[in-house]
Length: 458
Image (cartoon, rainbow, N blue to C red; front, top):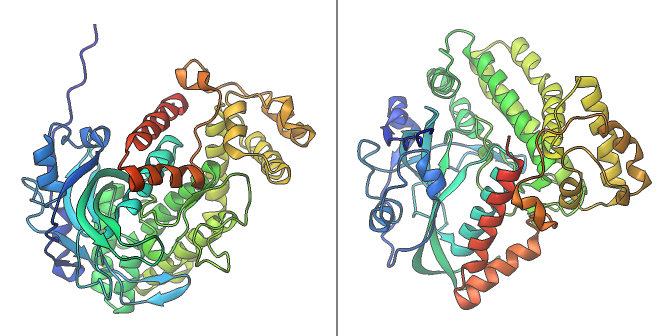
């Protein structure tokens, strides 16, 4: 008999402090009138040794922000700049969240516990530093769905209702407030580097470059560190762009301050899952130009990474940075191909075969206006049903030579209908909470998403 694996221990860290206080501001969390636990992600907590916390301890740490033993003694609001819809903004930073703690996960990776809606900071400008409960629910749904679909994403660890009534212009008000805690692999953004370049802080750029290389990529840094850093970020963000496309996901706000240097997606505001392969679908009502539309996301992420290269130009020759930046397209093509084959549930073959399959599949999906989730659900394992019509003839023939990556024996497949996450269902789940304080639909959806994740997983 195989012994059950031992739970991961909690391994606190304070690595961010080695950068020095010019990178962050110590802040005080908000004192909320209530702290009602609405969601705790024990699966994620188990990866960092915190699943054994009782609810009182959970609320103390993630609602009142009592420091975790051995980690940061005070929350830190990180400083950064960024391009927001291609306009540079030097007046942003952690404005309604902070870095609460650091630790190591069960893979030895440095992890950050960051917040959203935890109160005002020096970077709040005119905001109240709060998060709506609806925003927190939406972030849980986004992160759970993306994780199940194989996208590198932050994980929603905790959601606590705060008892505050918030005024907002984009939802009926007053609306309920909440504090969210995310578990993320890094809190460092492209905008963190942009701020240092803006300040002409060459020493700070070198220090941050070596920190990121060492802590997140196991790379010692050094003289050509900026080029190696850019290479890591190009590969990681190109992979993320490919994963977004295969998942049919529209992030909505791919500003440079929303791009993590580890290529992990985070910060879910006006997101959408695309009902069909519509390249023009946008998620943000204020994205009137379609800058971050579904089909433009690889371009948008590439543009953001270009801003990292521009920042690193202060401490590196341009030519090697340009060469690395130019590799983004090839890395993206490799990544989107791998992500689509993974979602089809087949084993990759030769790169030329794999790319030809994807090149046949994408226009067929776009032209036929086929529901993305239904297509992948029906075709998982390597066979496109005839019911999808003649437009899929070439993709059907190419896919037929592939071996299945895994079978369809998980109970998830017996349900027939795919697990989707379209906007009408999101609004319905929220309506149950807003109108009747009924959380059952949310919990049932999370169970369904996780079952899909198990069925798809390697």
